[in-house]
Image (cartoon, rainbow, N blue to C red):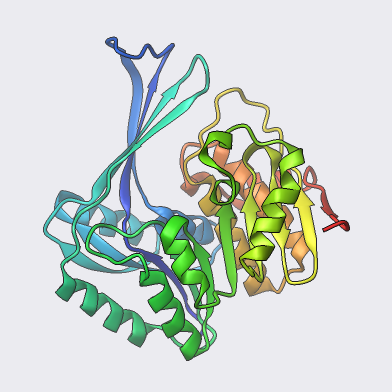
Length: 316
């Protein structure tokens, strides 16, 4: 039976704090705070479960948060196969200024993974992975895990006849591309110099498309933040607009992961590119207006679908 395996090597306990009119270097009072289990693969699994799609989350978990992750995922009906570490799973903090709507992220590196535990994980993954499975490889590896880990896992999965979706960046992404994952989801930041982050305009689209094609990317969903997304395959390029969600304060955690979940749904339901893109944008928008990917549900997503327009960019 076809399985969906969400690989989450470096999950995180997401701590979100809200302050009003944040002042750097001063005492700021928190008027709301909450914790939620996260990490890209965990977030993908939660969105899929909202649509009645079961998956298995595997990776590393450690310290005081281990039971919390297992218990919460079990209550959501999500199967886990974690390898336990001694050190605590990381805490990623998001500070949101309710006055400006600006979110500041402070992310930890994560616990160290000993070589012997990494080897056990790779052996387990090799046994789990079967023909026609859908494998989601997400996030940045924790300390102790080499940058080419997704290359290794992609090769294993492809040799088994599985379908691989990759969502990573930097050196981890570069290594993995050599193993030819079936689909990648990336941010425009992977192709733009850092000084242009947050300053994207539509005039930058040709440059991003050119860089993606130069990397011989076969199928890619490229998130453009407030501008929506591009989809590139071997022959065509599509553009989908972002949705104006109608709120000043946006919660960005997990929006990209919700888009990855839409790619999985597109594969399972054999949706065409345009429909898949609409779901990706709608899932991302539904996540932005809620405080957790657990709230990215069909009702909210379907309400946004009609607001997404997808067009082919024929000049690229």
